[in-house]
Length: 174
Image (tube, rainbow, N blue to C red; front, side, top):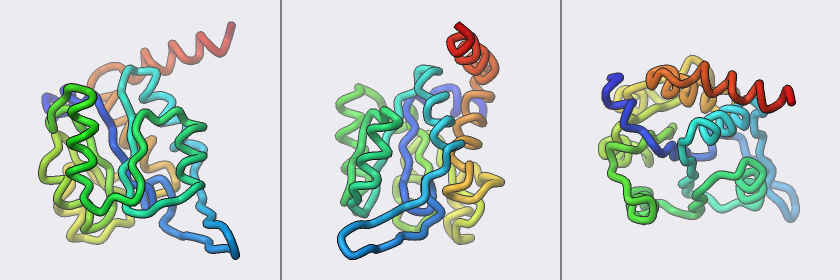
């Protein structure tokens, strides 16, 4: 497992059920989502470690666009039911291969991409048939710190979690 994780250079996430708890609030003219601050810090830690980040989601939402900009996520693909095609474009742009990707998803739409990438992860509340396809299942639910847990697992497996966090602490201390 560690050898596979050491090749990861890009973390791609689904949104609903992964970066959120899966609930969608539909107002008269807007869609609201709950995002977790700890997941946001996890994405920041990933970026500080040198990992690229991205979102590939089947839905389209202004909330996702806004949160992605706040977190400086490198790639955002919304409204994509064919996630492998979206990932192929990102890989071409980054000159990477599937083995360099961790994909975090939570439902059956994500299984095809799980079967291609170097490391697949899902969240605590995912359906059993999705969990059985993933290489890692978080102890935390989607939208409640699962993304950070998975990112920290990757960085810890690479042996760079503590040094990345220490570097961030030093930057904030100045």
